Length: 337
Ligand SMILES: Nc1ncnc2c1ncn2[C@@H]1O[C@H](COP(=O)(O)OP(=O)(O)OP(=O)(O)O)[C@@H](O)[C@H]1O
Ligand SMILES: [Mg+2]
Image 1: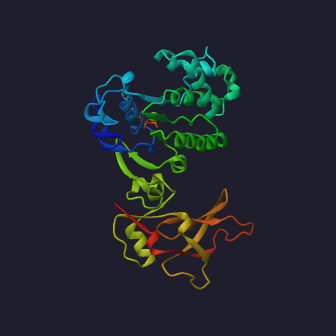
Image 2: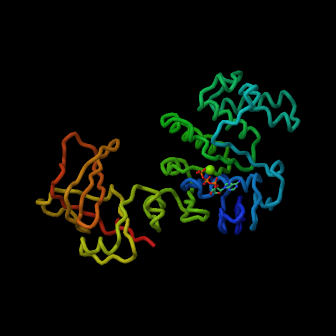
Image 3: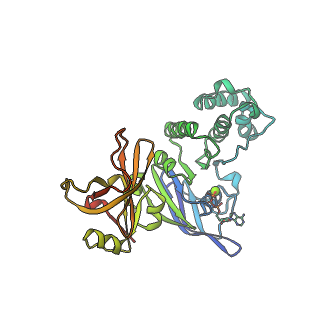
């Protein structure tokens, strides 16, 4: 049996079917991410595990025990939310100590534990600060400290970084992952940010209105989305009706749609001889946009347009109206269900 198991879990809010027959397992020590658009049921799933919502049907197991109907305080689950939920009248150390105090742990033992967790989160010099004296990122670290210090069986993180700006956010992603690994703490993380999911996760479950659309390693989801929804959510895929793509390329491709990542498309001036074997398309450049270290060209292929990425180069490679030839290795054209 896996460390966490959801077995046929359904959740209705009145007549709205929010979780649809969810079967999901998490192994001990894994960092698993629920990724998906707003309103698809990610938070509801976490809340069902924490006991903050009851399930309508199905069963939930944690560490071999069924917890489906257990009170939240008996589940041994730690949760960190999107909004900072610190006690404003307590210092970072007091906030962190709160749960241990309630448990009746001895004072000097609490002091020792709080100190070591604040150290782990890089907050040693902020122990006596009140939340209003801390930055957003520091407040969220205290919220993490408060959850981690309880040594829960599972840590639930519901978009804990979404209120934090991009630079700090990237640092905290790496920090959280480091701490999670060092404690071997089983973690369920929620985000709607595909990059964040890619950076942090051992495994990703992609959610689509109440069901799991696709599960896998980050690289699997990125390189092998199986459905149109998965391809449109991850990796900036070009999605083209299979019939149109077949007509333009002369290849007979099955399925309803095909998906191609911009970075697997080669782009060359139309006059040059072919460099690679594979699928070839002709088109006209319609525009280009720099995206960090790449330039994304939009190429009009008649019935559809494709984005093709080229590593940034100070030389301008192609201009609007240029005739170009696109080449794609056949294995990089995915057919979608
Ligand atoms: N207490 C509630 N009563 C009624 N409907 C609810 C309740 N909580 C959530 N819902 C509905 O359930 C659906 C899923 O909500 P949930 O909060 O799980 O989504 P989410 O994936 O976490 O979205 P977001 O990324 O915006 O946080 C939504 O349509 C929401 O309106
Ligand atoms: Mg949510």
